[in-house]
Length: 168
Image (cartoon, rainbow, N blue to C red; front, side, top):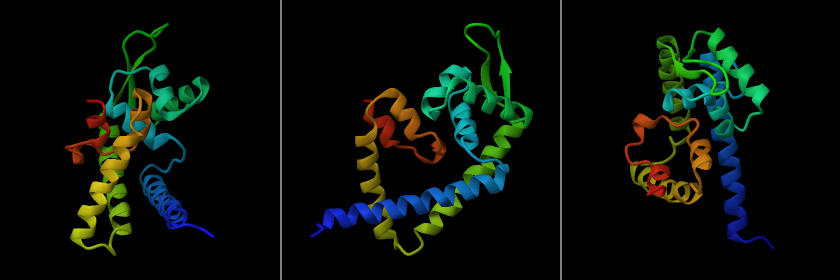
C-alpha cells in the first residue's frame, strides 16, 4: 500500500516535469537554442566577470562543453569576453543584445509558469509561495548548489530570495 507521501512525491514529480517543459519551450521559443544556453546566459548576467571555468560548476558542464557553449553565446552576440586570456581566462558578460534576450526569456518563462498556476486562487498562491520558499531554503546547502539552484532565476522578482537567505 502506498502512503500519502508516496502520492505527494508522484504529484510533485509530474508538476516538476510540466514546469520544466514549460520553461524549456519558452526559452527555446525566444532563443532558438536548446540545452544549457538559457542557464548560461542567466548565470553570466547574474555573475558578470566570471570565467568559463567558473561557469562550469553551476551548469554542470565539462570544460570543453562550457567553452563551446560560451562560443555559441559570443557568436550569437549575447555574451562578450573581456580582460586577459591565459590561465585566468577571459571574463564574461552579457552584451546589450544579451540583456534584451534575457528580458524576453524572463517574460516568456514567467508567463509559462504562471499559466500552470491558473487553477489556484490568491490564497492558495500565497500558501504555495511559503511552501516553496521553505523547501528551496532547505535545498541551498553549499555555494555551488545555490548557484545551480538559481541558474534560471529572474533575480529582480525575488526580493527576499530563500536561497540567499539560507546563506545567512
